[in-house]
Amino acid sequence: MRRRYPPIGDHGLVGDLQTAALVSSEGVVDWFCAPRFDSPSLFAALLDHDRGGHFAVTVDGDDVTTRQLYLADTAVLVTRFLTPGGVGEVIDFMPVDRPETATDRRTLVRIMRVTRGRIRFTLSCRPRFDYARAGHRLDLRPDTALFSGPGADAYLRTAGPITLEADGDDVRAAVELGHGERAAVVLTVGAAGTPPPAAPTADSLREEFDATRGYWYRWVRRSRYRGRWQDMVHRSAITLKLLTYAPTGAPVAAATAGLPEQPGGERNWDYRYTWVRDASLSMRALLGLGFTDEAQAFRRWLGARLQEGRTVTGEPLQIMYRVDGDPRLAEETLDHLEGYRGSSPVRIGNNAAGQLQLDIYGEAVHALSGADDIAHIAGYDGWLALSGLLDWLTRNWDRPDEGIWETRGGRQDFTYSRLMCWTAFDRGIRLARDFARPADLAGWTAARDAVLHQVMDRGWSASRGAFVQHYGTEVLDASLLLMPAVGFVAPRDPRWLSTLDAMEADLVSDSLVHRYDPAASPDGLRGGEGTFSLCSFLYVDALARSGRVDTARYAFDKMLTYANHVGLFAEEIGVTGEQLGNFPQAFTHLALIGAALALDEELDRAER
Image (cartoon, rainbow, N blue to C red; front, side, top):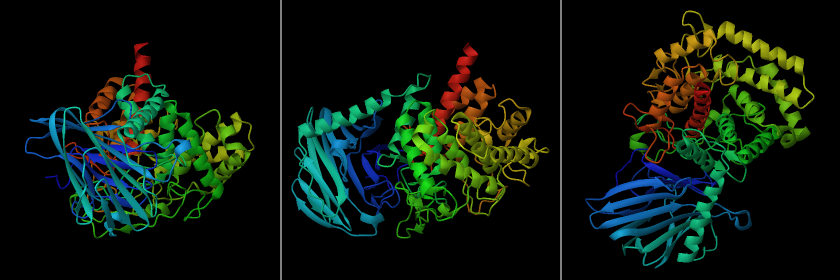
């Protein structure tokens, strides 16, 4: 019997750079959207065990132990089943489109093999189209099932001694394999009327496997990271790559929607979109490892958004878009789904797209300024769009907004938003000077200095001895851990060290960091949340830069123990160490990379 709701962290991720699937350690695909990350789900058992739909390839029995791992330096996932009668494996991967063979169909390959003894695998494929809001029709043959839903077809084809049987409008099968024997099922999803894919064969499956494994081997070899935590850093880099929509270069914040920050609570958001903030920081992290192609693709995507100026807010940019740049993300609730362990409402879309968050301009310009070839990538038109944005910001930076955490409790003068406005002006000034581009340097410089003076005057609390969340409060906010990283304060400035001490007292618990205290700073939502993993890694970065290297290294090593069994992190960590929120979370993995780079640099300096 499958668990109704496996832990959020009890999953591996496979993907093809256009969408992704979560596979539990029991061999169940219980989250998959196609053809894109932000498309309606085909399998969503994580949000409703009974109604959501799943695709299971499992080994039944009372004495089955499972293990899950990635093939090193790849996105090929292996789920192992250890039984008294033998050992079997399910190998999951999604072929990455090659330019010469690119299609609009998404393919998930699931290969069964036995490495010892005999194993009986069971298969159950129960698609539920459009977030389980639509029915489907089944057309079944012994080796092929066609599930026809609204506007989409899903083909399930077999290889080896598997005979599909009808289970209502779904299918099931069982196959017993001995040592060295293999079988496979291949799911292909495309638009309605898509011609059936070719029947998989042993040779075609081997070719797809080799091509997929080879793709990831070649990609990881481009990394220039040679530090102390190569396995975790490269796993995080692969995860960021998996969360990037290759046709446009736009990263999504996470692969899932509706997973709770507190089980049973209402903080259940849809993260399958491109946040300017998250994407910009993701690209900075990949650029720090030497992955320049991804950074250039995102800059082109971001530049297109600037030049289009198409937003629902009327601002030059909005905080998030769909992966194709569409700014419309109307939020709705899926009341027919019970939610993960009763966490409701389940939301798709995201009304935060209409919020004002001024910090995004800092992260955007920070991303655009991360390489020497920016002038060649952006060109003259790109520079005009960027300089126009900064001209707009000189007139608009001093406004209350909703802030980085997308609070729904009203606008405030958030210190972090001002910090990143300062970053936007500072990086823009540097770009204009370095590349001799036309710019209102006097206006940008005056705005930059005004922001700094204001933050020092109003964002600093003498009574707390710390920079605070927003003006007029004593509440602390872990987003300000980025202050030294962007150069706003020196990492050993007395005000910064005092702020770090205050955060350690208020927000840090055994090296895990809360974003802020919702009880002290109401955010318009009920319930609480776990510690925020982004902030825990930012804390490591800040400790390392401030000279507290031993403490930083211990905090980093402890934080790595909270990764799941295949090295992935969700958004938050719960009180018992469980993963909470959408999964896997780009924010967490980009911050892990940044913390490792900063810590390596400081450790190397200390050793020298």
